[in-house]
Length: 231
Image (cartoon, rainbow, N blue to C red; front, side, top):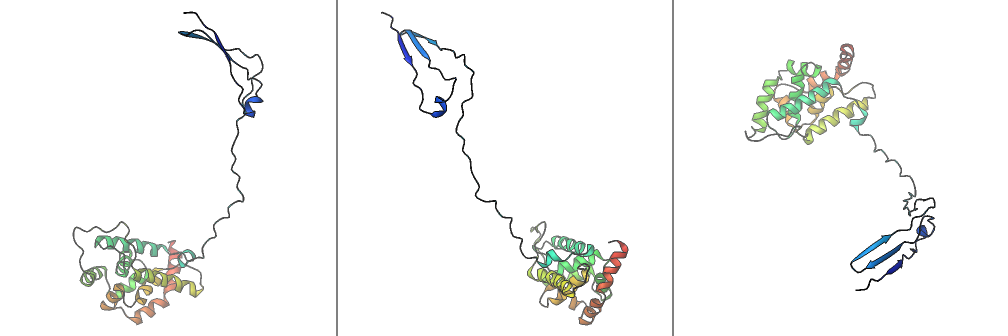
């Protein structure tokens, strides 16, 4: 069979990027037979330049404004004392010990008694409100949890407990005085929630309005004592 020869010139692309490329040269492909082919590429002696490809840019019309901070809540305006924070943490722990799903006013009350060094805790003990009595009466009032139930790592606050904390913070803010929100504020906040379990337990164990008024007069002293002890 006679050998045949075929020469093909590559067609220049229509892209302007290729037309402007100085290193672009046509190639010649020659076939010597139908059973094989020989590829011959004509080299370019010109300086090669990179092909510029089109880029896509995303333009931002305007810089997004920073989010407007929400109005301050009582929790963000008032600083809580060390004893307040520790009592709250101990209250969550007491709720977990009893396998309750929430941290209620009764748990906050037990937390203050576990912490034990605040003026509120001392007044509670003097009034006959002790940790063991509160635990015992809490189980009688709210019931015992099932042994197979496990409470969350941080049991959420009940509505009454949240209201007690908000009351304590708001009372401190309304006073207009510097200082921290103490456990005395928190105890009075629990006492202010008349339908809460904490209020019922305190009243059952001998706490009354006279004791609450006595505590209200000593709230500033707790701040002074905390300052002196570096707490």
